[in-house]
Image 1 (tube, rainbow, N blue to C red):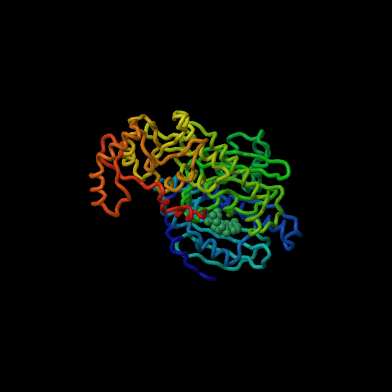
Image 2 (image 1 turned 90 degrees about the vertical axis):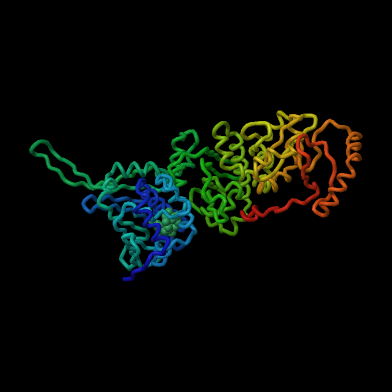
Amino acid sequence: MAKHQFQTEIGQLLKLMTHSLYSNKEIFIRELVSNASDALDKFNYLSLTDEKFKKDEWSGKVFIKLDKEDNSLTIGDNGIGMNETDLMDHLGTIAKSGTKAFMENLTGDAKKDSNLIGQFGVGFYSVFMVADKVDVISKKAGEEQAYMFSTDGTGEYEVKPVTKEAHGTIIYIKLKEDEKEFLDKWRVQEVVKKYSNHIAYPIMLNYSEEETEGEGDEATTKMVHKSEQINAATALWTLPKSDLKKEDYVEFYKTLAHGDNEPLSYLHNRVEGANEFTTLFYIPKTAPMDMYRADYEAGVKLYVKRVFITDDNKELLPPYLRFVKGIIDSEDLPLNVSRELLQENRILANIKQNSTKKILQAIKKLSGEEADTFIGQYNRVMKEGIYTDHVNKELLLDIVKYKSSTEEGLVSFEEYVSRGDSEKKEIYYIVGDDEKVLRNSPLLEAYKKANIEVLIMDDKEVDSIVTPMIGSYKEWNLKDITTIEAPDSKTEEEKEEISKEFKSLTDKIKEVLGEEVKEVKTSTRLTSSPSCVLKDSSDPMASMAAMFAQMGQ
Ligand code: ADP
Ligand code: MG
């Protein structure tokens, strides 16, 4: 019998689970059911692709057993299972950067924080919110020996060989004294419905109930064991749209996103023809925590004919749509498509193209508060899209928004153009990192005076790279006002005149500033400021691509 220490971070995490995150304990069921479902997906795949596992009839199931006498809840599955190393690697250590990121993102609000548990891949440990002791008994498919991993969630765990007939995992949870609510059939059923109704496998609830037979003095009561399926167990995306209501989509989103929030929007499409596939995509109301991390997790799962293939392929959608959650289910890909082949697969490329367009069209259609929420969360990644996705540039240009020198809030190019000078067809903008400084820029003065709108682009890191690439929007050319002559009413001769008049002064200034500047000249563009610094329009854009390179684009 071997005792082991938990990795330090897990020690911290366990403390947190038991002492801080107690207000939303029910989610441990969601997390354990989700793990069972993942394990069933993995075995399902093997049983369809690997000769070794093809022979026996198998149908995946999750079971939950409530034992009031023993004060325990057990969750089991007949999935892929874990061997000794798996138990230690997956439950005794956290391989991913998950824990640290999780801890850093904690807000102190227990409800919000418990929504983070699933997002950061630390789901298993949520069991310690309710458990005094946990035994994980598991046998890996194709192996002989089963093992038991036991811990009371303090600093140590133990792994020892045990006997178990079939492959799969059983998690026995000895509940804390005051967690009896999770022995109640209705309570457990409610939690499963809320978060796990649409996992693709049946969840069987096993419990005992007193039953009375006969009447009056003849009546006898006895304990009866019961077993019933408590979830819908359908792959929701395979159902026809006409059979589904908004609630169904929201429920499925909760299963998918390990959370309790509603999505901002969803889109469900079935494409038929030469290439057949179904997609169900969700746009979260708040951007995933890891959206700007280089090691962000993919949000889309790939299925082939309803068999789960992968959930960590970042090629399924373009990187700038990495906040989208959902499912792609292809009818045409071979089941045993290899990861390398996925990269260059034409069927997938087609699905990706189609999906990207559909998602952008759906985003474009958002209006009112939803559109505002979207822009608040995702304006920046949409700009990334403009930089990287030339095919969909037009759609993206209809989505992004900017601050404006003449309007409140944010404006789109479309709005700008509707108000602009349709003879000249120019869109003016200025880029910098401080909105206030930009708004007070001397360069804006002439535009203000002439009542011409200028877009205030204060996300310099992104705008300085992306905007020059845009070129034009519907034949309207974008003009950086720091590189062009300002609007004014003076003729060329008058300007010439002024320039001559002040030549000795500008020469003098150039002499003093020397190499610091390229040229000093008079200007008619300023109204109240004496001077301003201009960029040379032939100056190559600095810092190109630094940020996009980080995101792997
Ligand atoms: P995540 O599910 O995000 O990977 P968890 O903390 O929920 O994180 O689970 C950690 C890992 O433990 C899983 O990735 C999986 O490898 C393993 N695991 C947990 N439960 C099971 C199970 N029922 N069957 C097989 N493996 C499991
Ligand atoms: Mg999990």
